[in-house]
Image (cartoon, rainbow, N blue to C red; front, side):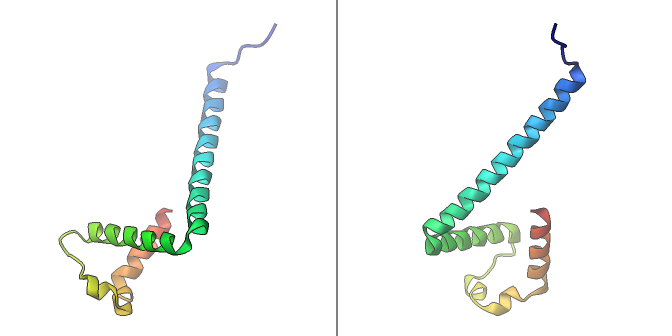
Length: 92
């Protein structure tokens, strides 16, 4: 006669399955990201920069960013930019 797994074993296996599904999902997202870059590097970078620009505008809220300022390197050497990048990288 087969032994019936108890509830704790089922919960443990379910958590392992969920963890593996999350790992697979993350790996697929990374693969899709890299594949998009390989397929069209210039288009990918342009789309990525546009996306980051929209995100920045959203984060800045009412402190609207002048697009002309963003074209200059001095804009990215401000202290708040370094802090924002640090925070962003720590959340990934």
